[in-house]
Image (tube, rainbow, N blue to C red):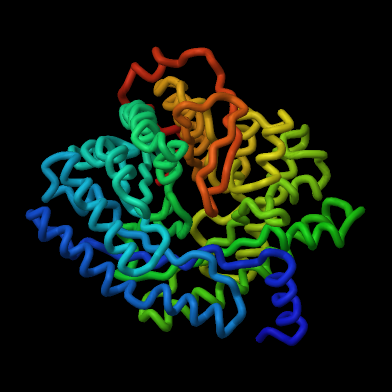
Length: 454
């Protein structure tokens, strides 16, 4: 039972430290929507989503009003569409029809994003997987709220390099098709290794096939809360530093647990997980980079940054699992460049490079996230960047991802603006040396030896 002091602390975190519930995400299984006829399939999808999520946005607003807890986004994730469309879709154009049905259902329910335009192909691609990936540039160009994710690697299965090569080309095509908006289509596409089934955060959210018919997953955030706690703990040893972060993460997660349980009960859905990731925004005071600086580096990217991030990530997880028995999703610290003003400043100073970000992904929650690169970057180079990140995830048995945006018409130092929570980002330099011969090999990289545990 929370005491009066805890309520006061939570109120302070909300009012002055940017604490919020970043998203309530309703996962909806579409397995019972499958049909051989594409028009019937699209109608089934629209009907089920708009029925299940009819009150999602209103319930979120009710909880906001009653508890005074800001809930920034209300979102939907669905079963990977490559599975749902396999019987009905004859080619990429049919998958685009499904994308439009998803977009229409998102607009009808009032959510800001719908995830699950996805394929799981870490070991190989079916025709449906291939068709969906080929449809991505058009699907993201003609929809507003649809997000796409492709899992191309896992510790258990290795890396599907055919999918990696294909996605390098499709990311460039998506960039060209949405060039009028700083290639924003690529901001809605993420490539995964070891993608979790219950991630509430976009663009990587999808509803796993082992999930219930309708489930509520909540993503909390609170970089400002952690930073404030560290400001009040200056001069402490690492033992004290770790304890401070852990306690702050505990409080943040308790808020998420409350919201998740209330939302699930009111929406007649199963309670899934709380994802306690520290998800920054472009707002000052809501930055993971600022936490790293409070830990002791002069700016993100300085020597010691990866070390500081490792401490932060581990203590956030430790605090979270003490607060909730159902912690899941990604859970840790995100380092998206465009969504964190401290990261943006570090790039502009020259302190933070693509290579340093890659090193940081070895110890953080996801990977290379919301990074703008020159629009003339070769598609094989993009595939090489993806392959590097997939290797980190595969070998280290963790989730890694790449959400990279080749901004057509812009060069290093230019600014790309994606709007809203997606923020803005300086275009970062990319290594000019080629990896084309590597990517053109194709095939599948076998799983690492430690995958054989059973």
